[in-house]
Length: 549
Image (cartoon, rainbow, N blue to C red):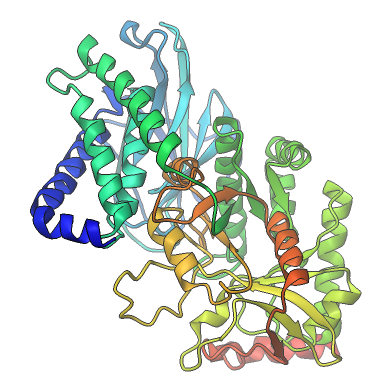
C-alpha cells in the first residue's frame, strides 16, 4: 500500500486522467450497442376503461395514429399495434424492439406501465426500467411481427408521449461494454491510493488501448473488439479476480404492494407484467433466479394468464423460480389476532404446496411495519424455520444492533433471522447508514454497500440481497443481471456475488449459526416509524377486529 500511495502521489493526476478517459470510452461503447434503428410510426390504437387481458378480445374499432403515440388520463387502458417487417440489412442479426414513454421516473408506482404482445402472445412488462425485448437472435428478411402494447396510464392525471423502434443489437460490443463498465464502477468506489483502484484502472486502460473506434462497425472495429475482449478475460478476469471472501447472495425479486397507490385489481396487473418480465429474462440468462411470495398474486396470474402460470410452474421445477414466503399475503403483524396470523401461514403454505409442490421454510416480510413477539412460536408450529425483513432499519431513533440473529418469542421459541443489509456504499463513512432496502440495485455501489453495512461480519461471511424495482413491481433489469455476471467473478475491491434462492442463503446461514454463537433478540421487533398502522383508516380496522372475534 505504501508503494502505491507514493505512486499515486507522484502520478495521481495521470490516474485521474485515465479514469476519465476510460469513462468516456465506456459511454461511446454504450452508444454502439445498437445500430440501424428504425422508428415505428404506423400505429393503430384504441382506448378502453376495462382491463382487457387478451388483445384478441378487443371489439372496439382500431383508429389510425397520425403522429407519435400519446397516452394519458386517469385509469385508462391504451392499446397500440403495428406491424414490423425485417429488412435486408438485419438478416442474420439479433433484433430488438425498444419502447419509451419519456416519463423520467424509475419507480413503477404511478408512471405508465405496459404489456408487450408479439404475434398475439403476451411476453413481458414494459416500463421506464424495462424498455426492450429481443424479437429474434437470427433475423430472417421479410419476417413479419405484430407488435401490440397495452398501457395502463396509472392513477395520476397526465399525458405522456411514446416512441419505439427496432434495431440490431451488437452482442459483442455489449459484452465488452459490461466487461469494462462493471470493474470501472467498482474502481470509482475505491480511494484513489487503493491498490485495487490502481490495478483496475491500469488494466482497463490497457483494454481500451486495443480498441479502434475510428470507423465504428468496420472490420477493424470488430477485430479490435475481439482482441480487447480476449485481453480483458485473460489478463483481468482470469488473473486478477477471485471470488474468495465475502459473498452477496443475490435473488431477483419485486415487491408488490397489493393496495397502496393503486387498487387491488391494478396490483394483479402489476404481477402479470412483473412475472412476464422475469420469465423472459430466464430465457436469456440460464443462471437467473427470481423469487416471489404472496399466493394472492399467483392466483391472479392463474386466472388472467394461464399460459404464464404454467411456465412459472415449469421454472419452479427447474429451480430458476422460487415460490417462497409463508403467508398468503405479506400481512401486517401488529393488528391481526394470533389466529389470523396462523391462518395467513396455513393458507399460504397450503397454496404453495398444492400448486407447486413446495413446502415453504421462509417467512418473507420485507415491507411490514413491525413484528409481534408471538411470531416465532407461530412460525415454528407452522413449519417455518427462517425470518427475513428489512423494515426495522427504518427506525427513527434506535438502530437495530443485529442483521443476523436468533429472534426469541414470548414462549422462548427462537427462529433464525436475517435483515437484508442492502444500501449505498459510504466510502467516507460520514453518514447514518442505518437504512437498508428490499428493492436493491444489483450494482457495485449496493453490493459493496451491503457488505459494508452488515453488522455480523465476525460471525458470517455471506449476506442476502433481494434486487429489482419494487413496491409497484417491475423487478430486476438487464443491467442488474449483466452486472451480476461480472461481479460473481470477484472483482478486486468488491465482494463477490452469487445468484441464489432465499432458501439457499438461509441454509448457508443455518450452517454458519452452528459454528459460531449468533446474537439474540428477545421480544417484539417494534418499528419506530409508520405508526399510522395503528390509527389510520380506523373504522376499517375496528370492523376487521370485530370480524376476528
